[in-house]
Length: 366
View 1 (cartoon, rainbow, N blue to C red):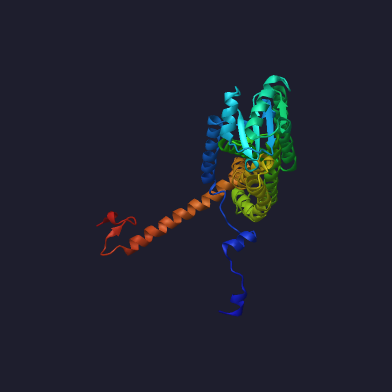
View 2: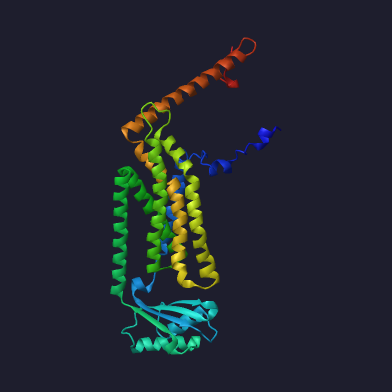
């Protein structure tokens, strides 16, 4: 081995990926990615239809009781059964802080400070071993929940409209449509996972959802910017189609998208798995789960949903369709030429004066 060979860097797949020289055929495998995406969306839709979303009292209205510093030993089932015996049905009980606290959500209990609320407060205090005055009460009416829901939907609609207008003005209308489809894909999967897991949907979840849409949009815009830059050089005599050029541009920014997403997902994963689960900071759970799922889904969609869908839209334009058709004719001609060469070689190898029509033993004739 010479010194020049030893000094040359190894051209591995990882090296090509890190230097933007990878050649992963995302566009050629778009049909496979489409089937995977449809399957995931079907599972999320089934979870949403069968299980539904677990809305917090901020959306549905009700009364929440927060217990801290409990002195008695109890379980969530014991507290729920005791509340049921007292006439409070469908109570949601969550034991927190290693059994020293509890979060109890019930339906609306009449007026604040009324007899029914006092009775429930007494039951919770008896089971948990705390004084009734030490239990925090949070009562939300159903109209307040409807107002939050309406404002959340308005905020989401305004976000999508502004995003579509910006991308349409900055790039073009088809890129705006592809970006909106990608964002709707991210929303559907995130909401579906919330339904499957059964975590509570709170205002913090809505805030996290809008945040992850921003992350997903950032990755998509980065890819579209490189695609727009590379495809601007194409002409009617180019040797690459729009899809091939978009695939090359996607490979060039792949490591950037992955690096940005991984460095964002790691701290969010720490909030979810360490802060919420191990340290008992349950208030972080709603926010961290939506951020974690949304960032992962946004990374996937910006790579295998946004660009393939954009290529499918663009290659319907006459300019790019003609270039695709022109690139297809030489490929068909080369395939026919290779088949003709194989036939001629087979005829030349036919022994004892037999003529072989094709490269198949059954077609030998005298």
